[in-house]
Length: 318
Image (cartoon, rainbow, N blue to C red; front, side, top):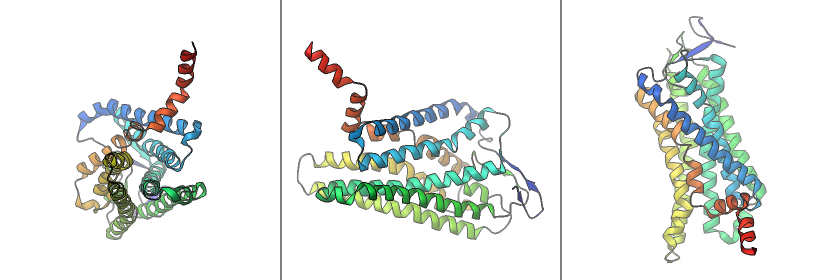
């Protein structure tokens, strides 16, 4: 049902101001669409390839498949609304639509933070505990880790979304953002929101800082284990194992920390919008390329899917 504020104004919709102060940015809609299509195609490619090739039915690619599906859903929860607002004269979203968008943006973003931490543990087990890897990363345990990542994100989002929409908005309906985000919605309140800000920072610390510590600790352990081997290929193994993951983590975590680890009143609204534009549009786009560009397993799966070995064998016989 629509929210009724302290002055009993019926808020059935919100006006998303987006980049109204920067009208020339509307011409970037084509660039945003290209990034979105690139994200869709790249992640769909990984999902289909991981499903079809039995050699990719390993814990690493199982988690990568989950990450690709997450990025598909995450970008779809905000970018289509952004494109509609950039192209169309009406820049509105219904109250229910805003609730749904906020819930899924929070849920998928939180799930991705946890999942990236899980992926770092998988790489740690593969490099530092190779003899016990099959036991540590048993398929049942991998599925439980994936389910725990999703459940934690969905649950945390449900609690925080309900807490955000319980704040009286006092008739305000202009959201100074291009999608429904917690800091932008909290700015509409005419009551004390320090409890909401504290909750936001605590939950962000739990679901951002803890996975980040796990990721950095895992990469540090991997680097130390490989460098102790005193092999000439040690650094290459470190970069091959951790490089791609650290790059994805940096592109995702740094903007998230800039948005959610400080109170809404403590940063510029325009700055927050541009940071959000980066981690919703730009960050998910290179992920498929980062994980597959130098990956021999992916290249082999592509050749197998395209029938290249079969064509080569025919050529040799002829």
